[in-house]
Image 1: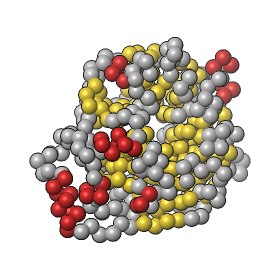
Image 2 (image 1 turned 180 degrees about the horizontal axis):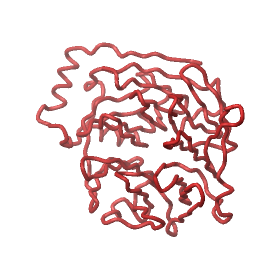
Image 3 (image 1 turned 120 degrees about the vertical axis):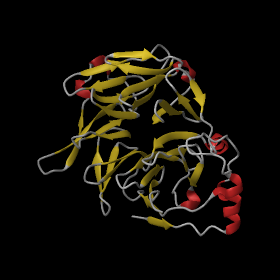
Length: 344
């Protein structure tokens, strides 16, 4: 197992002065910063330890599309080829799902790991020897709703487990399977729970809420009708922070959408924003397809950019997950990187 340990050099006084000039002290916490050209090297004030694991010797399919941790601390990676790799900190174990790719993983309150992949979804369950195996739920899906592609998101809610593909949206409550179909010529682009409410989105329609068995359009939600692959997070007392693929960030207040400018906007425009993950301290990790991962503060200020020069195995970051110890895991085409973002 190839491992790479990277600790950035100490930052010079000149770099610190450049950073002081680049970030005016007049900006207070909670105040969005105006968008400005990002100069990563000038703003770099230090980096935590970065440890990368190449998984080329474990699997023929190396793209890490999703990351999750169970109650015992084991890290699970969903890969191309329909494989799940389990890492206990010392050894790796492979779990096959018979799907072509695993796109999403989610852990429920009982400790069960749910799986979404190419044309299917289900969960992991132990056999008589305690070995985890994949159990498909496809038999519970109506026959006329079994034609769908990748399940990009799996969401645990009190109403059941939701699975989102572009073509169909599913909810499994343990007994029955509910299926939603998108509007004509549209597809499902989002699935998030924010403050107990469940949201989805459709291109051509915009942001929507799932209430019971009904999908309802939201006031001002059509601002997102041209957006794809949106991720929603709580922001402040009432707002929702929205990221969209190859776009920028915005805030939705239940009635309208407004831009959320950050100091990373110029960098994001050049490196294709992919996913967003809310971190435990209120900061946000933004993954990109060509420029590594970015961490911005709650106020939109740039904290750091993590790229190949810092230890990433690939500049395209497909997944991000913060574990129970506060460490950030980044999945790329070539493997997995753990970033000690909680380290002083």
